[in-house]
Each structure stands twice: as C-alpha cells, then as structure tokens.
Length: 357
Image (tube, rainbow, N blue to C red; front, side, top):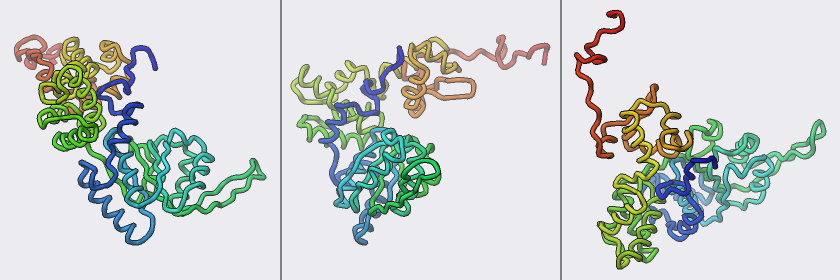
C-alpha cells in the first residue's frame, strides 16, 4: 500500500469484502434461489437452467456471472450447488498461476461438482487454455517431462459445472466467454430491494429495525447488498450504545453521520474529490493527476475507488479535457456554480478571437 492511498477494504462503503464481511456473509447468505432478493431476471433465467438440468438428470451448463463486487455472485454460486444437490469447490483466478494448479483441482473433482472460480479474468494464460478443453470436452492434457521428451497424457474428467465470476467481463477472451452455456450480468439494486435485504439481515442478526430505519440504511447503500449489511451492523452498534437498540430513521441518520456516510452514500473520499473539484478548480475540467494531488490520494485510488460511483450517480463526468462536475454535484455539496461570463465580457462567446479571427 503506497503512502496516502486509501485501502478499499477500510471504507465503510467499499464493495470489497474484508474478513468481518466474509464471516457475517456466511451466516446471512440465502440457501435457495427463492430466498435470493433482487436480480429477478437473472433468478428467473437461472431457475430454468437448473430445473432443466435436474429433469435431464445431468449437470448444469457452465455459468458466467459478471458485475460489481458485493452483488451476490458468490452467493448465487453456492445456491447453484445447493439446487443441484452437489458439493462446491471454491477458488480464484489469482490463485491459479500455472496450468498444473488447475489440473490438480480439475482432476480431484467429483461427478456433478460445482467449481466456483472467482475473478476468473485474472487467471494465467496457460491455465486459461487448459480450461477451454476441460469445459468443452471434460478432458485435460497433462504434460509429463520437458523438452523433446515431453509427453502429453490425456486425463478424462467427470462432468462438472464451472461457475465463473468476474468484475470485468470485457477482459475475458472470447474463446473462454463462448464456452459458458449461461451468462448473466448482475445489476445494482434498487432502494426497495435493499430495504428487503436490510429487513432480512436484521432478522437474522436479531436487530430490531423499523421500516423507516431500513429505508434510511438502504438509501445510503450505493445499490449494493454487501454495503447495506455493513451499514446495518454499524448502525446496530450505534443503537446499542447510544439508544435503546431499536433502529429508526433518526438513529440510522445519526449513526451514519458519525461514520461520514451522507444521504446519497458518499463517504469522506467521495466528498473530498467533489470538494476539490468544485472549490479549487471551479468544477473543472481538471486532469486526474492534478485532482489526485489536491485530494492527497494516489491517482489509482481516485480513478478506481472514488470515480466509478460518482460517475454512476451523475455527480462527475470524464471528458477528453479532464474531470468535470455536473450541476447535481454543486447541488449535493450545497455550493453555487460560478456565473458564466456574459457574451460581451472578455472571454465570453461574443469576444472576437485572436487577430479578429
């Protein structure tokens, strides 16, 4: 971690899972497709795929799930295994750096087992090429020896279902993407869906939450169930220490104010980026490197951690000339945009160009 960089996992509204999230999510995850909240189109399509596979008495087609972190890709993979009555093996692309790593996993699979491969776009190229044959023909060629004496030994695999998950589907090569029988893109959640998530999680965590309190938490959760559950836990802590343990709108608002999460889900980093863009640069355009220096963060942190949500919320725009703030950003930050120069003023639209051109 470079100096000045904000670790994404330490942000309350960060979508990556830390160790606490992983422990809590294991208890909060739905076990059946009917319990899964949101993603109605994906659920309907996936239900047809799984029902048909069960009716045939075979394994389900390979499934590719894409979308931002925290939307339920891992949960859906576990539901697929549960619906098919099969065990699940979990690994990730970065953990498979050699073809031998993948061969060892594939050769130990049982018939019908579900292999969940998270961040599949980060798998090494040799392992990726081995996966092509494994997915299509349920066979891999294991190379024994080196040089001219090397021999490829074909190894038959039992039928299995690969569930790949990626946050960057565009990085997947077409040959790999085409081998998935079912592809689904996970969308961000609507506030009403997140309210259901909050109520369900509150029941499982034995937290008393009234409808208005759930609305307040859902509205600041950036369309992501993982963030909603994390905010619920922090508001629960505040309610237990500062109130009677019941989460209502006032308690939720006060708690999230303490944790610096505003009404639209912006945190300190988000507001620092907008504040610098508005106050120091008049709303832009300004280059990314200059904006990062003004905020005191690394360029990558601003571009990859803060900007995606600000752009999605319509508060910031990326242009060829640099970053600019939208009218909604001025309104959200409670600032008045600078007055445009009149047509007759120097530099205005009516001002003739250099040498009268």
